[in-house]
Image 1 (cartoon, rainbow, N blue to C red):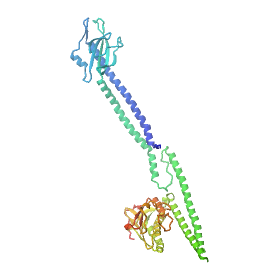
Image 2 (spheres, rainbow, N blue to C red; image 1 turned 90 degrees about the horizontal axis):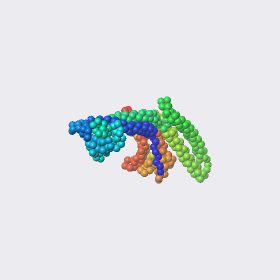
Image 3 (cartoon, rainbow, N blue to C red; image 1 turned 180 degrees about the vertical axis):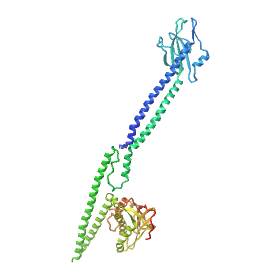
Image 4 (cartoon, helix red, strand yellow; image 1 turned 30 degrees about the vertical axis):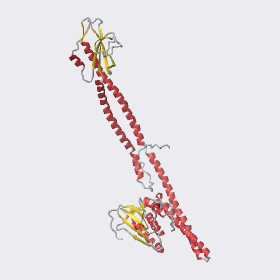
Amino acid sequence: MKHRIERSIRVQLLLFLLVPLLSLWAISAGFAYYLAVGFANEAYDLHLANSADSVAARLRSDGSKILVDLPPAAQAILRHNNRDKFYYQIARKDGSRISGDAVLPEPSRHLESLQPMLRYAQVNGHEVRMARIRVDLPNYPDQTVLVQVAETLNSRRQLAGQILLSILIPQTILIALGAIAVWFGVSKGLSPLKSLEQALAARSQSDLTPIAASDAPTEVRPLVNAINGLLARLAEDIESQKRFVANAAHQFRTPLAALKTYIYYAKKLPADLKMKDVLNKIDTGTERMSHLSTKLLALAKAEPANCSSDRYERIDLNLIASEITAEFVPEATKRDLELNFSGSESPALVIGDPHNLAELTANLVENSVLHSAPGAKVSVAVTNGPSIRLSVQDNGPGIPVEERSRVFERFYRVLGTEASGSGLGLSIVKEIADSHKAVVAIDDGPNGVGTVVSVLFSSKEPGSARRHS
């Protein structure tokens, strides 16, 4: 299986800019080394030729042989440092040695040349640089001798290294500064993309307003325009979906209400017991269908695509929870349940859509009322602290831990549950909570009996005035 290679504009730009920069540095380093060696050789070759002239100046001839006047003091001058070994040799015109160091190789080429001859050679396993000059002696029978001098390469290599460092260190500093400038330049050049990313990440799922393209660089504007086009198409689709939801609500509720009316009047007409039983079943099914359609429409409205932050306002969650609890008192009384509400001491101010928050609370309360046995107790509470908590607690059968993550799935029912319901209540709660950046948690009740479903909202009112419920 082939791994997908991640492509990064930053990495590509850095490669396109830094690789040529480093390549130029490597090429310049090669030229610098070549020039450093050349400068060192030129300087030391001139000194070596001067040493050969110095040896030649010490030559004398008595007519039959050559005398070399090189006292220790003169040899010390020729061996000017302790890093290199100095050699000299006087040879005849045919290359045979007359005097001097026998370890030097005999002259072999261009013996008649009047110009100093320079070459590399090996002496005692060490590489040396040799210089050879031609000297004419008036009192010598052949009149011409060859003077060879040589020295090891330690000093000239040290000088070449110093020259190379003097060139490379400034170049390396310039290359490093250039690389830093390229890095910051690329980061600065890509900052509009980062700003665009942050602007999009900060938006809610319902904010589909166009992105301002006036401040974007010319290269980024086509991308911004394309995103704006996509947002416009999404806004049209969502608006179309909203109209569909509104129309569907009307189309669902009108015939179902009419059907329930017909069933009501049909049950008033004279009929046998079987017909009444059928009408009762039709009535029950219609009631369930009406309840399901209401929940489906509520779920569609609660989805993030249909939630608009334009309807958000700051509201006290105590007001919503108390009103919804009061609405379910008749149903709780009918089922022989104890339903009560406990508000927070200070206003529990949250930012959200009041209608959706009421829908969330209604589904929590309804879910507990439907799944509690006669004689049970359902408690709705709002608490204010580091976060604002809306909780609904019952002492019903509870929800097994392994199924708590699945109860938010649409149409999922806990095994063994016989109470009527659509299976959408907690799904609606989860959708509305997500759109309000809230967290839904399911825990066991006190002493492990029953269930507590909590919704935690962020609190931004640390200095709220206190209120007694």
